[in-house]
Length: 150
Length: 314
Length: 144
Image (cartoon, each protein chain N blue to C red):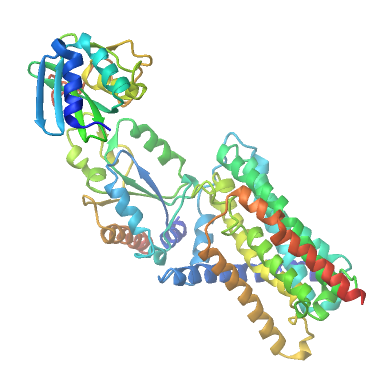
């Protein structure tokens, strides 16, 4: 039974200098920006030590790069914590969190197919949502995928 | 008994043509009463006939993985069995002296064949879903046949051991004594399972709308299967009324009244079946088997037999 | 053939195919099959096996995964039968018109006999469409 201030304080204290940006958009909505190499440690902290519930992973192709957001929910405190990682658009690569959170396997497969992000260490990177005859290497949710492609 | 006369009996009256017409009628009553119970209007009177004719005009598709001959032959088996059963039962009612010793047993055997043909057809389909439905039908047969036969023994005991349908149809009705009433109730419950209706239709509709053993059937074979089921819906109430609650059996001189009363009893049984079907949820296969083997059905059937023996030994 | 189609129109059994719809059309279709609207008056029954179907009611704009499967279902249905495209997505891909994952509206995969627009179409509209189709097919035969 934690409350929000406790959670925020603990996250700040344990991640410390690794935090790139920190933004509480609303009392129950916290965005923590990180570098890719610090992500597994942050996920371990929040998922294993603080027992948050893994909600989902989302991905967006922005002008400054591909942003991948990991959403964790602290249900008793009513707080949703999001880790934001900005990846290089040319070669987006990040460690997979599937070894830590088993439930992330499929969403990472989906993000890989639709945005082209490579998840290093993913145990089962197979096609999930796109059709069997969809060409390899074409990622429909990228900004570069135009209306006239495929 | 000339061959032509026998042919007439089996094909026209009271055999195939007669049973066909009444099967269509009873199927319509079933759908209409179901509709009314659900506060709606329901199909027009000729709907079962439209369904039958439409199915005859559809392409017949035989699954490649199954056994072709058995797949097409199984429905015919069921149809033949129920037609002959109907002929025998009506013959006992209209001409009570013209049956043969043991024809009650023949009728009971014949009435199990439609379920067997469902199983054959299901396994011959080469489809996993059909096999599953067929295996559930096998379990159902194992569970409801025993109490049904036990219940059918009671009128035999009452008729001083005669196993001629005609004799049984002319003795005092079994339901005039508690043993007969118990046996009749057990037989009605077993009839619900034999007809493959809710709450005991784990075999047919179990895979919920995928029709179980009938999943690969189309066109004329499907029409025959549905016709067999409708005929069973007609023959089973008639059979039960004949052995438990006779009064239909009367020489033609006795007039119209016994026939009218008999028809009322048959329709009453039909309505009981329809209402049971519309007001109950479906039992799982293991629940259904446990129900039939348990004290409430098999136990009561045994009790009925014992009471009948006591009554008749006195 | 005339008698076959005429009998078909008196007893059309429908099979529901969802080729990637958002489910709204499916909900309205299932609603149309409830006792409230009583489609059994027309002889319409919902069947669970494609071998028993006389009408394929297709909802959804067809996704690339669903397209070969819809074609297979079309081939598995015993002839004669009718295809009903239910909903705007089934008629024209609807709001998913430029989507990267759409193989096409239903009539680019299988031939369609009637289009029922609506997003989603009300049960009354679905019934109206199906009955219009039945009457038209039943009538054409009488004229020859």
